[in-house]
Image 1 (cartoon, rainbow over the protein chains, first blue to last red):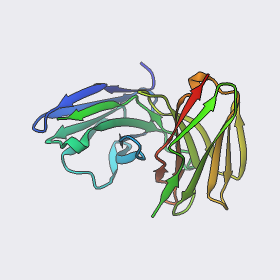
Image 2: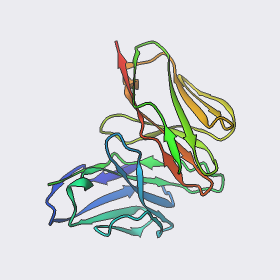
Image 3: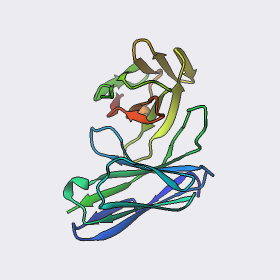
Image 4: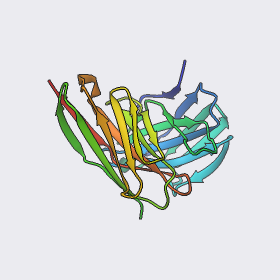
Length: 115
Length: 109
């Protein structure tokens, strides 16, 4: 496996379900991200982990809970979601540098549908 | 507030040239990125501009004018595989990425 791998690629869940999205990076990067992508809207940053510590939480509802057990793995735990949470959830990784040219490598995303 | 503007959709012909514009208003500037995203796939990095001018990389070029808050992505000798969404993003003074909504490029034979 190379790059950033996300599973599952597609997920359908009811509002009362609990599920998790998984992300794994094989690039040796030191930062990982969760983004939400909705049609015709800019990417929304949800969470950032740098060196396995969460450094940003952009007012994301508590029904989304991230977990970063090590520098290669990132999870997004989902609980009691709403239909408006239906979107493509993208994971990304990067090697943070002082130069600021922080190039992100994305996974192909998990398409979530909440019924 | 911070804002990135780019056209929602553009259409071009195979073999032609297309220019995708991006204008931005952000709190500071630490570079501008272009990403390509094919339908159902991961966004992939195309270019990074931090100084004014044109950066050329094969058929793709990216231009930046910091004084005008403006960038464009130029695609030459268009191929059908260039049909994709093109995302513009600016890194602000806090090194946060501000994203545009993307431009869907449709290439016709």
